[in-house]
Length: 105
Image 1 (cartoon, one colour):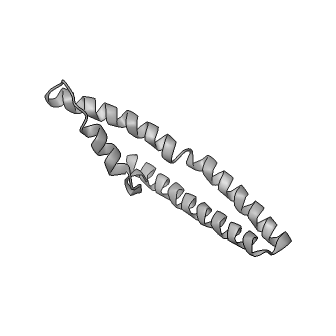
Image 2 (cartoon, one colour):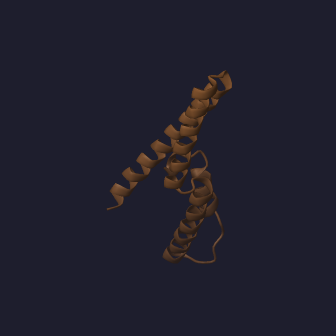
Image 3 (cartoon, rainbow, N blue to C red):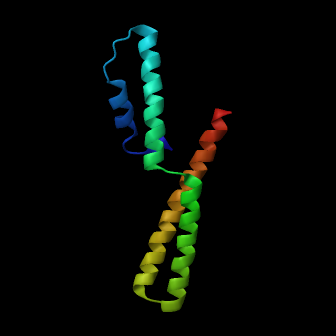
C-alpha cells in the first residue's frame, strides 16, 4: 500500500540521506530503525486505520443513498457518487493490506 503512494520514495529517500556518525553495519541498522519509526508515523498520518475509515465510508454511502432517495436532486446524486468512489478506494486499500499481510507470514 505504501509503495503505491506518491510520496513513499521521497519519505524513504529523506530518511536514508540523513547524516550518521556510525559506519558500516551499525550505520545501516540505525537507518533501518529510523526508517521504521518514520514509516510507522507516516502510515498513521496518511492512511489511518483502514478498517475504521472503511466503516465510516460505508455509513457515508448509506446516508448519501438515503438523501438521494428522499430528494432525487442532482447534488444528492453527485454526493452519492463521491461517497461511492471514496468507499471503493478504501476497499482497494483494505484488499492491498490483506495481500501484503499474507506475504509477511
